[in-house]
Amino acid sequence: MAKYKRQMNVAMERLDQGLARVHSLVKRGKNADAIHYMDNNLKELYGELQNIINVEPDTDNVRVRGI
Image (cartoon, rainbow, N blue to C red; front, side, top):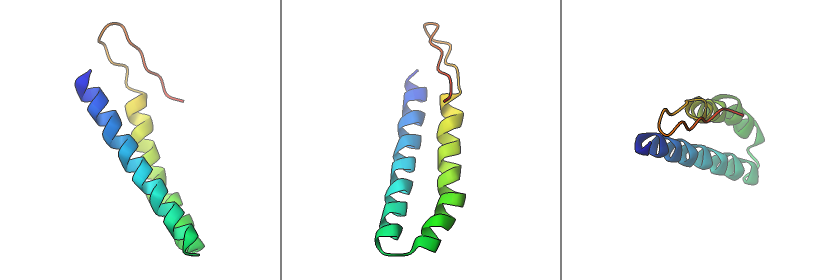
């Protein structure tokens, strides 16, 4: 379970950093760059997190399902 928690925390941190980047791009008026980043990089970061959430840890009969 500790490995799962670490993986989840890393994926959440990466997604958070990606969202901060989008925010920064929009704030600077670089909307086209923000859209490109969201369509490519941010989508990938979200997908990585979703894959981790879809994992079903087998410890203590805990089941975690995706959104």
